[in-house]
Length: 175
Image (tube, rainbow, N blue to C red; front, top):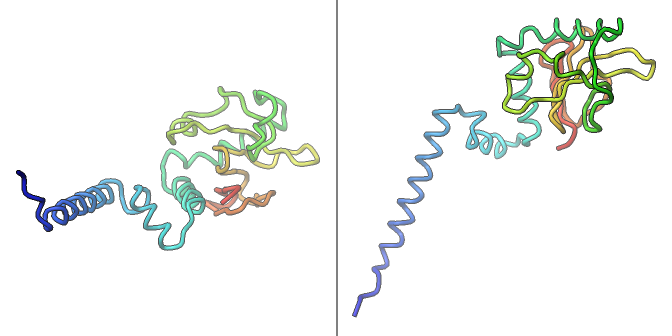
């Protein structure tokens, strides 16, 4: 006949599991940083920063801080000028969810845009009601960023936006 488990044994197992989970969180925060790791995002969320706001703020930080993105504004200005001149290669209308209007051909998207993030964005030109190009939109479904000349201001109302640099805004369409 076997004896029933002691009352302290399940508690020890629970404590061990809790300590293992805490160690995994700590290792994740140390390895990936406090902000963008999943525990860091949970902490930011618990501190009152919704996930959509975190996405926008992280994207704005990328635009400000990543050396490969220092060329974004110059590239966007060139794209807008080439659109005006009719020499930009396009692929028709942008996706319904994109902030832009006319989708750029893949050959028009530089490597520093296509390879900076894990998921390739859709890149398009946002055209005004009068047919003038306003900005270049780099989009991932509900979020992205728009880049124009330094005097450009957002011409649409996303749910949340953050200015990364003068004329460049990260945005999220929905919370």
